[in-house]
Amino acid sequence: MSITPRKTAYLKGDRLHCSATGNPLPAYSWEDVDTGYAVEGTLLTVDDTMVQRRVNTYRCTAENVLSGKRKTAVATVTFTVDNVEGLALYVMQYYRIFLM
Image 1: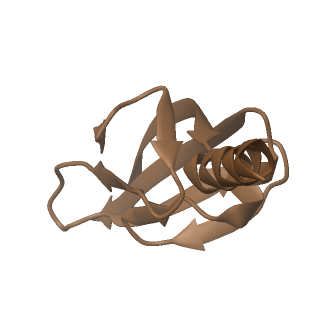
Image 2: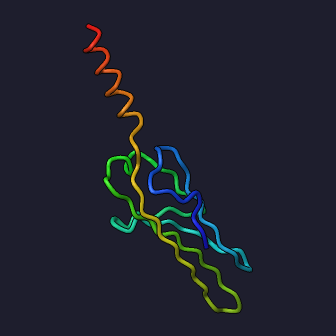
């Protein structure tokens, strides 16, 4: 089971990919550990709600069933989101004030 790319900080719009091996292929879900918000599928896209929070922790779960037996794999990632747009706006405002 893996989460890629594995970083401590992401940018808005980045995508985290969860993968695991299994036969049959597993079903995937991502869950925000703090809020319980869930997303189905292998991809988690960094969005505005994640930018606003200081630290984000998400759990990816892969599950499949074979011959009536359920197999589950779990991986967790904790990260921050760099607010490059906010930094760029701050720099633009700073230079505007400086140049006036």
